[in-house]
Amino acid sequence: MSTLLAPKYTEVDKIPLGQRIEEIKKEKGGYYSNVAMAGRLGIHTETLRLMLKGKREIYTFELEKIAKDLKLPIDRIMQSDIRNQTDELNELLRKRTKEMLQRAWVIVNELVAGAMGLSEKGNSLNSLAKVQYFQRSFDDAHTTWLKALEYAKKLHERYAKKHLLNIVTANLMMTYSIRKEYSHLEELLDVVELAFANDPLKMGMAEYTRMKIQEERGDYELAKQHAHRSFKYFEETGSNEQIGNGLINLAHCEYRLGNYRASANALAEAIEFVKPFENILILAVKEYVKSLMQLRDYPTVVKMVEAYHTLALEYPDYWAKLQIMYTFAKDDPSYAERIACDLHLDVNIRYHACKSLMEFYSEKRDFESVVRYYEKSRLLMDKKRTFLNEEGF
Image 1 (spheres, one colour):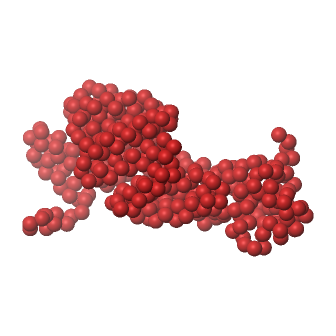
Image 2 (cartoon, helix red, strand yellow):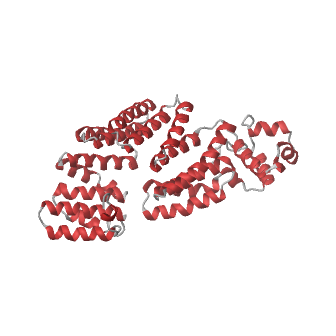
Image 3 (cartoon, one colour):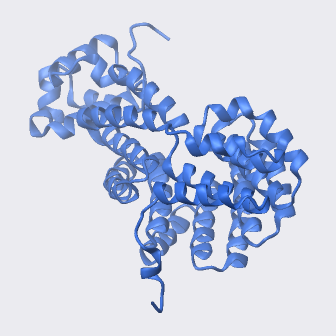
């Protein structure tokens, strides 16, 4: 390729260069109509149209003139100015410690504030919603994804681009489920299944969402049926990542039904599929250990916790949960006790560590320790009188 040619795609969102220019100029208004802009650039209107539609290559000198006319640096058009921020954000969201999410919040708000054009605005809002979701601000995440959906719809209508629409509808399926807005969710699912009937990934995600709806309603058998259909769609994708996710979801349903051996078997298979994907792998390992605990297979619990100790350290919440289970497998309370006292960990995890220690010491008939961790758990959680909210009081 000649070095005289400008890059075909932007650096971060991989937007076709012509589309990126068109999105920005449409946002800037009538001064940047094709006729007016072509006149200022000294080219024919049809030439500009072909450039914007990707039917004619854009040369570097032409991109320089376009940038000057748009009153923007070339780096802003090409998104090279946000490359470092985006790379850092992606890394922060991969591990997601509390401190990392605080830094991610700063970065993503800077990206949203500086976004230009449908694609960049939609993608930055999607990133903002992800941060909100990981911060457990589910209502805010839902609202932000609804805003991103409007950009995704326009991208689909104007440029036949489905990528953002795929992502945003999938995330909205999840947040509708969390918010228990089942009427709106099932409406969205009907649209998704009609629009993406030939897309096994999308259909798998839709079936997963139906699984969550039935789980919330307490129908675990029907939830398992949807999980199985979801897994079959994910198999069609040929993606090890998605197949692994499907197995994890199926294992979750088996666990809820008390089928711990079936759950463990599915998770053991999932682990093999997701080994290249550390953030999914550590979840599969944690869930596998949880099923093994129910089976009282303590030797395998010890083996798994020790084998994945280094990886787990990269994910503090999962590491802490594995350490709590390790206490029972090793018959040694010191592991859960360290979790209960670690102020760097989420308060809910420390609470669960205390609850686990109450159970551990109760089995040992060490009631003094049971009371000690009961008091500690009370300090960690809301001190309201829970009996006041009991039905019939």
